[in-house]
Image (cartoon, rainbow, N blue to C red; front, side, top):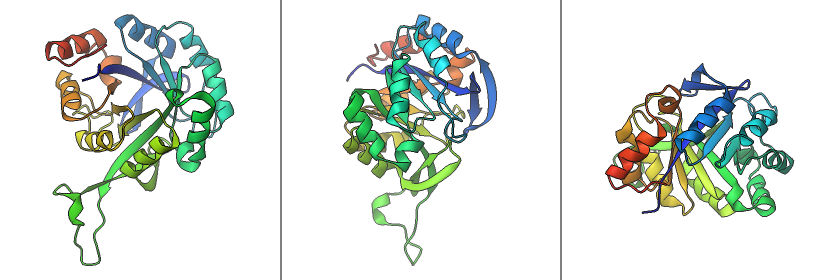
Length: 267
């Protein structure tokens, strides 16, 4: 088993770190640079910045926040939100980010994935897939397709911070973004986000089994056992965490020690 990564996620709104439940009810957490420096000191493997309202507000990512943070932390930084063109990507990488994460723009123009991979390398391109569980469709007689198994769920890709259901099947989209050149997938379950009852193991396992690129599990971590579950019950390469770390319920060293004691390799 390859070493697993523990990645704090900083959701940014108006230049501040926020956290909500099911993508709404946002609470102020603090200054992004100060929080990122603390996670750097704790030994986080990476940090993800998501400007969660940039796409829905049709504005660019907060470059000044990224530049200030990248100059003061010494671990890989991934940035997402408001990225619509390869020039946007160039600007973000120029101010110090190591990777970019695209979601809404990739759905609207999938060539952005391949163009970004060609220009900057697949290792820089993370495609964020936000998913929402929906009832699976039946046939004309009200019968579910037999290949869905006993758990009758479908998963749609949502964009604009969860505000828009695209109707796109999340598993097929994951396969598509890999073919287009994405180097990694950041998978967030809207259903479990901020609920703190565990990652969505069902969709995480399905997508991680469907692609060969790394999948970062996101949304719902509530205790130490949730890390163990996502790494033993799915092939997720990393776990993204927000609430638990932001509000001091757990620290990065605590999580890594817990996993080491259970023979889960971590960096």
